[in-house]
Image 1 (cartoon, rainbow, N blue to C red):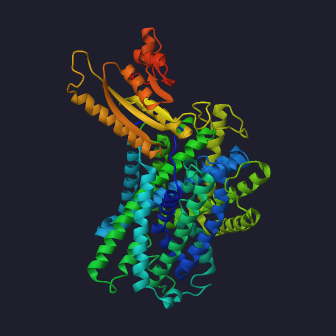
Image 2 (spheres, rainbow, N blue to C red):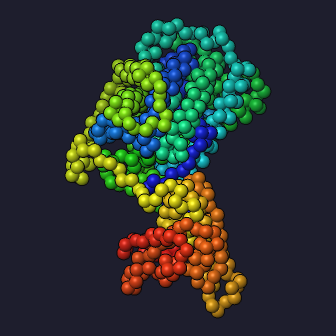
Length: 625
């Protein structure tokens, strides 16, 4: 399949973005409800609702910022643009920690959902749940390194599975478990839960809405960021807030607080939705309860595993953006043929997440530790992002803002103090936030200084990311792009270039595979191996183009000479551009281009772009001879 090149983007509409948003943010319900219930008891739904409302307020600022600057990087990019590179780096650095924590939590919850669903009790106990979690992380990282994962297809599957599970729980829950008296049972604000526990639970509730930063990063993948991103984000996030609070209501109804505890936050803390399914016993036929438990548990495990994968993608996109701005080593800004994120980012995420699980397991209480540490980073990120958007209004008033928050002073005036207040509560009540959080920041400062010193750039210097611009042509200058395709490294590069051009120009691609028939054979002679390769090359081309929202048509033709077949096809379709590749081996034969490329350059009825490579790079068979 063709290699993706930096800047190659997909196109997301409002509905697909809303689905991605719900899948990304809603997946955190699977591990957040039990953690919050452990401290908020009967007030769990109200804590989730209150923090969710704050997230909606924060998302307004996010929507204005990332739609005005639709680049990968989210809050880190906004902070760097509004202030300077050091602040942008530190914002991104704490986000790295949050992404790693989401990976760790998702992975360690997988065995609990799976084990409780199918009766494998052994993997739900320490240390085997931690071992299972680490194996999950390593396997997902290996898959990400070995092949490209369709992020948006995966996110859509997460959203669909999560929505079905959540609807089942809510419909059956309100029909059988809901009780107004149970909501207040065992709850006495100030004592059960205590004020200290409320202050502890509120920052923890931020864990219920992980994924907001990942969704904000998708601004670069929407054709109309000012319209698509806000609508999709608000629908997805708003639905998640409502569903989270309602599931909290069902959870508290199923497990009312007693004696200052609730089974939702103790027995079922690492599989709260399976616990709710178990609570249907006595209200539904046992066979239905068992089926529901298995469904919720298995889908929950799959959703959490998928959340690991998408979080790795999120950290990879963020790392790539920061490396492009000179904030991280160059390796974090280098992509591979098999992955759309830097391989070093995947390996680093897997290593940090695994270490987090091991260290916290040794000291006990990994769920509480990781959740409190997450709140440290995410609240800093949201506060900085909101301040950055306000400051950009003053610093760059002429910046085009496709989505503009009309009452930004009021929105930011509400969101920033509340976010800071939650961060203060987190620092005051969470030892992990007080100790491990600042230690991570100090380590990040060391990394930043080392990178800037090694590259000879000033610590406060603003480094702009290189902007790929393949042609200095107005949009719509090319409507039909012809690209001969063939399996191979240069063929991959040529197709990726054509897709990038098609995205920039709003063009249609015509993929052509030419089977060259030797003179000693009939033109229609049987050539099974060549025909198989032709079909495979077109399938790869169509799959990649479809992922990126580019229209493509494919065709296989037979000809005595490839060059003449390309020229004839260009005339037939009225091509505006032909994209070809040139292997370095021809320069060793005292000619710059192959005979095929030379012929097309002389005979083509339209413009021709030749993707050429220096000696020693992609030194293999040319995509067209």
